[in-house]
Length: 122
Image (cartoon, rainbow, N blue to C red; front, side, top):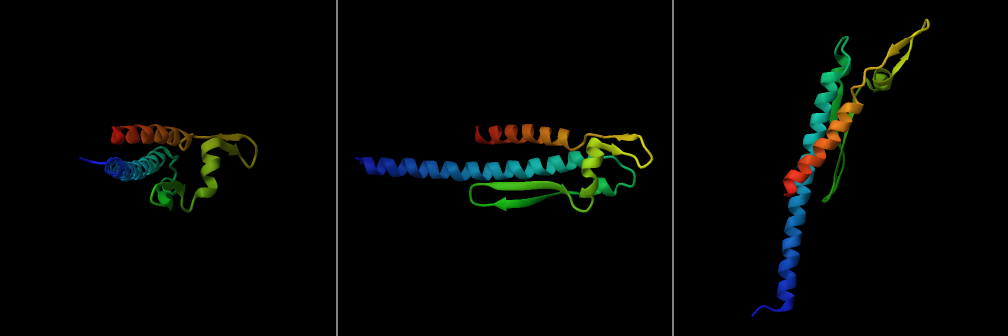
């Protein structure tokens, strides 16, 4: 006959195993989402020479046993990201309209991350 302590140990082992699986699933979903956001920004970015679109990357910012933080950013063309997203004034007057390409990718990424995590944890 199993004691209460044995039952508690079994429950704790099960919870630990689920926690590890959930952490793994979450990290996998974060990596996949970061790659998807990077790809979407690159595809929808304004293209004159193509350098700006190619400059986007996803890098791991912070990771520990229970969390992962990824950052999607422009490596060497970050100075113009805001100008291209929101528009800017021209030298001799007038205005260049912005082309939203970062914000929509961010919104899609949030939805994708949520759906991937829900799918993995079911």
